[in-house]
Image 1 (cartoon, one colour):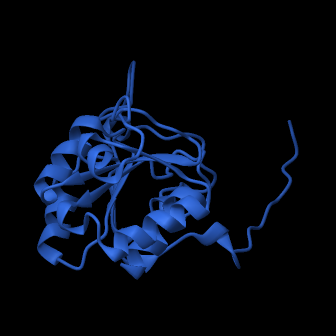
Image 2 (cartoon, rainbow, N blue to C red):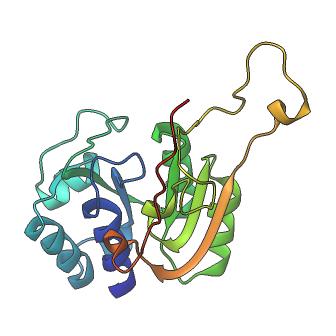
Image 3 (tube, rainbow, N blue to C red):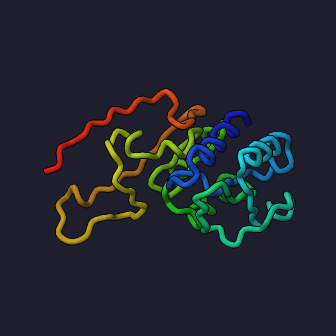
Length: 192
């Protein structure tokens, strides 16, 4: 739960308006009303994150009910819902998610492998913050955009234009943490 707390806080609080910030937190039903989840929710509240609940979370945690699972907050708010198992989490993500970046936090390798294989998002992570989904962090240079479509090209294209990329990251609790200690080198380029 310590790793989960670190990752969730980083994914939501590090830069909540970013496209790779956490918008929905799906929690296994067995963690409902446990000390670990209570601690995580208190930390999120302490950071100023407003929690909205899906039907189950709304009823059990007495948080405001979310209007839509499709909502992207881009702010210090997120939706929380409980799921029965990894397959119900995958089904929820594939139905309601943005297909951008999704993460599973688990010590169960089989569940992680299933998640990484079946979640249909541009980037899927195991035990690492969603904030790592960034062109610069992937070594692509400056990021100019991101596509969550399955095919991106229009008009006449060659073979390279038909390729898409899906990123899978396996971690052990890594967080972005505001890029503390990272030094970026910027170079002014002449305009022509």
